[in-house]
Image 1 (cartoon, rainbow, N blue to C red):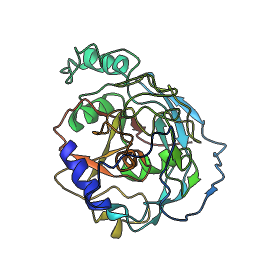
Image 2 (image 1 turned 30 degrees about the vertical axis):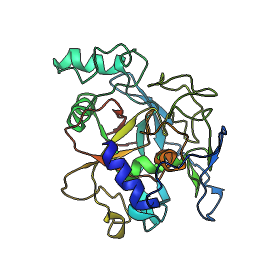
Image 3 (image 1 turned 45 degrees about the horizontal axis):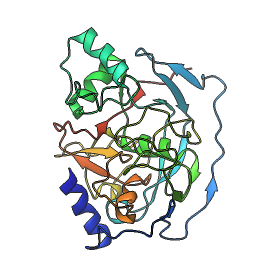
Length: 289
């Protein structure tokens, strides 16, 4: 996947994918003027704002409505309006403790790195899971994987035109990525919920682990995406990944690699891959009053 990331960065920015920024604790990746506003989040009175899933995971309601998807660069263009029905989403990434319940209940095989003490703390996100593994867990929990559109709306947290779930700048006080500093004390994964939540109350929507989405990846899909509840192409080779991870494949605090943490950034990988940077969270199957 490292090669995929480097190739995508090269297509977006040219060949300077390893240019370091000055030694500073903050990066501003604003690329153009964009609306700097915030939507008013209105929760329907007939639905609980928070529920608990079969797996014990707390879930929060994302209200129905429109949002602006994309950023206008490469496979993230055009920026387009998407309407989504209401849905519930896991507040945290699926942890090792939760995944163990699934394994024990179903006799399911352990993912890669399960016995590696650097990755298997109970309150850290499970890693080494393939797309099939994530889908199997979601089915067991009475849930499903998020669509790419659901993931991006959730990550934006009600903000409009921002690069990250909290704004346009990023420091190690905001997320777990690329080394340590500030609140980020972890070289590898961090306990879920170690950083401030976004406007919907969701944690780790940038950094920690890449999150599998339900959709097949197509670099040109945004040009043909339906406005309401898009579910991605009907077939493909790779599955979508979102959110960035603790490892950005670069030793420097580089603009080009921090870009992977941007809310609109689209990554992808073979659905059979189970890398140490890959995890997931789930959505509820349906929303009923």
